Amino acid sequence: MTTLYGYFRSSAAYRVRIALNLKGLDYDQVPVNLVKGEQRGGEHLTRNPQGMVPSLVLDDSSVVNQSLAICEYLDEVHPEPALLPVDALARARVRALAQSVACEIHPLNNLRVLKYLVGELGVDEAAKLAWYRHWITEGFAALEATLSADASSGDFCHGDTPTIADICLIPQVYNAERFECDLSAYPTIQRIAANCRSLPAFEKAAPEAQPDAN
Image 1 (cartoon, helix red, strand yellow):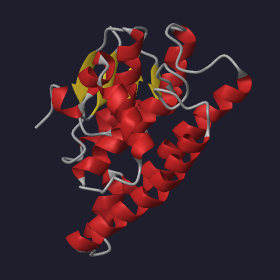
Image 2 (tube, helix red, strand yellow):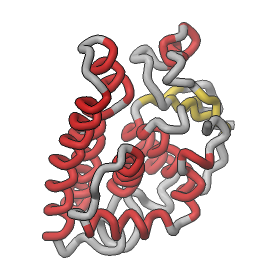
Image 3 (tube, helix red, strand yellow):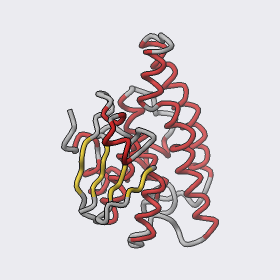
Protein backbone atom coordinates (compact mmCIF):
# COMPACT_ATOMS: atom_id res chain seq x y z
CA MET A 1 0.00 0.00 0.00
CA THR A 2 1.24 3.49 -0.85
CA THR A 3 1.81 5.52 2.31
CA LEU A 4 1.63 9.27 2.66
CA TYR A 5 3.61 10.80 5.50
CA GLY A 6 2.15 14.22 6.19
CA TYR A 7 0.43 16.57 8.59
CA PHE A 8 -3.24 17.47 8.41
CA ARG A 9 -2.61 21.23 8.14
CA SER A 10 0.41 21.02 5.86
CA SER A 11 -0.43 22.76 2.59
CA ALA A 12 2.01 20.53 0.72
CA ALA A 13 0.53 17.32 2.15
CA TYR A 14 -2.96 18.68 1.41
CA ARG A 15 -1.96 19.03 -2.26
CA VAL A 16 -0.88 15.41 -2.46
CA ARG A 17 -4.05 14.18 -0.77
CA ILE A 18 -6.09 16.00 -3.40
CA ALA A 19 -4.03 14.49 -6.22
CA LEU A 20 -4.32 10.96 -4.81
CA ASN A 21 -8.07 11.41 -4.39
CA LEU A 22 -8.56 12.80 -7.90
CA LYS A 23 -6.71 9.76 -9.23
CA GLY A 24 -8.90 7.46 -7.14
CA LEU A 25 -5.85 5.85 -5.52
CA ASP A 26 -5.91 4.07 -2.17
CA TYR A 27 -3.27 5.10 0.35
CA ASP A 28 -2.45 4.89 4.00
CA GLN A 29 -1.58 7.97 6.05
CA VAL A 30 1.04 8.28 8.75
CA PRO A 31 0.95 11.59 10.61
CA VAL A 32 4.14 13.58 11.18
CA ASN A 33 3.32 16.26 13.75
CA LEU A 34 5.05 19.44 12.61
CA VAL A 35 4.12 21.34 15.77
CA LYS A 36 5.86 18.74 17.93
CA GLY A 37 8.89 18.66 15.63
CA GLU A 38 8.48 15.03 14.54
CA GLN A 39 9.68 16.00 11.06
CA ARG A 40 13.17 16.44 12.52
CA GLY A 41 13.25 12.99 14.09
CA GLY A 42 15.78 10.50 12.78
CA GLU A 43 13.20 8.13 11.31
CA HIS A 44 11.57 10.82 9.21
CA LEU A 45 14.90 12.39 8.21
CA THR A 46 15.80 9.05 6.65
CA ARG A 47 12.77 9.44 4.37
CA ASN A 48 13.14 13.17 3.87
CA PRO A 49 16.54 14.74 4.70
CA GLN A 50 14.96 18.19 4.47
CA GLY A 51 12.85 17.38 7.50
CA MET A 52 9.66 18.32 5.71
CA VAL A 53 6.39 16.76 4.61
CA PRO A 54 4.99 15.19 2.54
CA SER A 55 6.82 12.01 1.69
CA LEU A 56 5.14 9.37 -0.45
CA VAL A 57 6.45 5.85 0.14
CA LEU A 58 5.59 3.46 -2.68
CA ASP A 59 4.85 -0.25 -2.56
CA ASP A 60 8.51 -1.07 -3.31
CA SER A 61 9.71 1.30 -0.53
CA SER A 62 10.82 3.98 -2.98
CA VAL A 63 10.31 7.49 -1.62
CA VAL A 64 9.14 10.55 -3.51
CA ASN A 65 9.46 13.95 -1.80
CA GLN A 66 8.25 17.46 -2.66
CA SER A 67 4.54 17.88 -3.33
CA LEU A 68 4.71 19.04 -6.95
CA ALA A 69 7.14 16.27 -7.84
CA ILE A 70 4.77 13.77 -6.21
CA CYS A 71 1.78 15.15 -8.11
CA GLU A 72 3.60 14.96 -11.45
CA TYR A 73 4.85 11.46 -10.63
CA LEU A 74 1.27 10.37 -9.95
CA ASP A 75 0.14 11.98 -13.20
CA GLU A 76 2.77 10.11 -15.19
CA VAL A 77 2.15 6.73 -13.58
CA HIS A 78 -1.65 7.10 -13.42
CA PRO A 79 -2.46 9.34 -16.41
CA GLU A 80 -6.23 9.44 -15.96
CA PRO A 81 -7.72 11.79 -15.04
CA ALA A 82 -4.94 14.08 -16.20
CA LEU A 83 -3.68 16.81 -13.87
CA LEU A 84 -1.93 18.65 -16.70
CA PRO A 85 -3.31 19.63 -20.12
CA VAL A 86 -2.07 17.97 -23.31
CA ASP A 87 -0.99 21.17 -25.07
CA ALA A 88 2.55 22.29 -24.17
CA LEU A 89 1.64 25.96 -23.75
CA ALA A 90 -1.34 25.08 -21.59
CA ARG A 91 0.87 22.83 -19.47
CA ALA A 92 3.27 25.72 -18.98
CA ARG A 93 0.39 27.97 -17.89
CA VAL A 94 -0.85 25.42 -15.35
CA ARG A 95 2.64 24.89 -13.97
CA ALA A 96 3.15 28.64 -13.69
CA LEU A 97 -0.11 29.02 -11.75
CA ALA A 98 0.83 26.15 -9.46
CA GLN A 99 4.31 27.50 -8.86
CA SER A 100 3.03 31.00 -8.16
CA VAL A 101 1.43 29.47 -5.08
CA ALA A 102 3.85 26.69 -4.19
CA CYS A 103 7.06 28.62 -4.84
CA GLU A 104 6.12 32.26 -4.17
CA ILE A 105 3.29 32.48 -1.61
CA HIS A 106 3.52 29.33 0.48
CA PRO A 107 7.25 29.38 1.39
CA LEU A 108 6.88 32.78 3.05
CA ASN A 109 3.91 31.69 5.14
CA ASN A 110 4.59 28.12 6.14
CA LEU A 111 4.85 26.96 9.74
CA ARG A 112 8.63 26.94 10.04
CA VAL A 113 8.88 30.54 8.78
CA LEU A 114 6.16 31.74 11.14
CA LYS A 115 7.81 29.92 14.06
CA TYR A 116 11.15 31.51 13.20
CA LEU A 117 9.58 34.97 13.08
CA VAL A 118 8.14 34.49 16.56
CA GLY A 119 10.82 32.37 18.23
CA GLU A 120 14.09 33.66 16.80
CA LEU A 121 13.22 37.19 15.74
CA GLY A 122 10.83 37.98 18.58
CA VAL A 123 7.99 39.14 16.35
CA ASP A 124 4.69 39.50 18.21
CA GLU A 125 1.39 37.96 17.12
CA ALA A 126 0.11 41.14 15.45
CA ALA A 127 3.27 41.52 13.38
CA LYS A 128 3.20 37.83 12.45
CA LEU A 129 -0.36 38.17 11.17
CA ALA A 130 0.57 41.33 9.28
CA TRP A 131 3.43 39.42 7.62
CA TYR A 132 1.14 36.55 6.67
CA ARG A 133 -1.60 38.77 5.28
CA HIS A 134 0.86 40.94 3.35
CA TRP A 135 2.19 38.02 1.36
CA ILE A 136 -1.30 36.63 0.75
CA THR A 137 -2.36 40.01 -0.60
CA GLU A 138 0.71 40.27 -2.83
CA GLY A 139 0.34 36.76 -4.18
CA PHE A 140 -3.43 36.58 -4.52
CA ALA A 141 -3.66 39.96 -6.24
CA ALA A 142 -1.31 38.75 -8.96
CA LEU A 143 -3.03 35.38 -9.19
CA GLU A 144 -6.47 36.98 -9.42
CA ALA A 145 -5.27 39.26 -12.23
CA THR A 146 -3.79 36.30 -14.10
CA LEU A 147 -6.87 34.12 -13.76
CA SER A 148 -9.46 36.80 -14.49
CA ALA A 149 -7.70 38.11 -17.60
CA ASP A 150 -7.25 34.80 -19.39
CA ALA A 151 -10.01 33.03 -21.30
CA SER A 152 -8.30 29.74 -20.48
CA SER A 153 -9.66 30.04 -16.96
CA GLY A 154 -12.93 28.15 -16.66
CA ASP A 155 -14.71 26.46 -13.80
CA PHE A 156 -11.21 25.78 -12.53
CA CYS A 157 -7.85 27.50 -12.91
CA HIS A 158 -7.49 26.10 -16.41
CA GLY A 159 -10.56 24.93 -18.23
CA ASP A 160 -13.33 22.91 -16.66
CA THR A 161 -11.42 20.10 -14.96
CA PRO A 162 -9.07 20.35 -11.98
CA THR A 163 -5.34 20.56 -12.58
CA ILE A 164 -2.21 20.89 -10.48
CA ALA A 165 -2.96 24.61 -10.32
CA ASP A 166 -6.19 23.95 -8.39
CA ILE A 167 -4.39 21.39 -6.24
CA CYS A 168 -2.04 24.17 -5.11
CA LEU A 169 -4.66 26.90 -4.87
CA ILE A 170 -7.11 25.27 -2.47
CA PRO A 171 -4.71 24.64 0.44
CA GLN A 172 -3.53 28.25 0.18
CA VAL A 173 -7.12 29.53 0.24
CA TYR A 174 -7.78 27.32 3.26
CA ASN A 175 -4.83 28.80 5.12
CA ALA A 176 -5.73 32.36 4.13
CA GLU A 177 -9.20 31.82 5.58
CA ARG A 178 -7.72 30.28 8.73
CA PHE A 179 -5.67 33.44 9.24
CA GLU A 180 -8.78 35.56 8.53
CA CYS A 181 -7.41 37.21 5.41
CA ASP A 182 -9.92 39.34 3.51
CA LEU A 183 -10.48 37.56 0.19
CA SER A 184 -13.26 39.81 -1.10
CA ALA A 185 -10.95 41.36 -3.70
CA TYR A 186 -10.42 37.98 -5.37
CA PRO A 187 -13.78 36.86 -6.83
CA THR A 188 -12.23 34.57 -9.44
CA ILE A 189 -10.18 32.77 -6.82
CA GLN A 190 -13.25 32.44 -4.60
CA ARG A 191 -15.36 31.09 -7.48
CA ILE A 192 -12.75 28.49 -8.43
CA ALA A 193 -12.28 27.51 -4.79
CA ALA A 194 -16.03 26.94 -4.40
CA ASN A 195 -16.06 24.75 -7.52
CA CYS A 196 -13.13 22.70 -6.22
CA ARG A 197 -14.64 22.25 -2.78
CA SER A 198 -17.82 20.87 -4.31
CA LEU A 199 -15.85 17.83 -5.52
CA PRO A 200 -15.48 14.79 -3.23
CA ALA A 201 -11.74 14.54 -3.94
CA PHE A 202 -11.15 17.99 -2.47
CA GLU A 203 -13.63 17.53 0.36
CA LYS A 204 -12.02 14.24 1.42
CA ALA A 205 -8.56 15.90 1.39
CA ALA A 206 -9.56 18.80 3.67
CA PRO A 207 -7.53 19.13 6.88
CA GLU A 208 -10.53 18.63 9.17
CA ALA A 209 -11.26 15.28 7.48
CA GLN A 210 -7.85 13.78 8.28
CA PRO A 211 -7.19 11.19 11.00
CA ASP A 212 -4.68 13.44 12.79
CA ALA A 213 -6.92 16.55 12.79
CA ASN A 214 -7.19 18.26 16.14
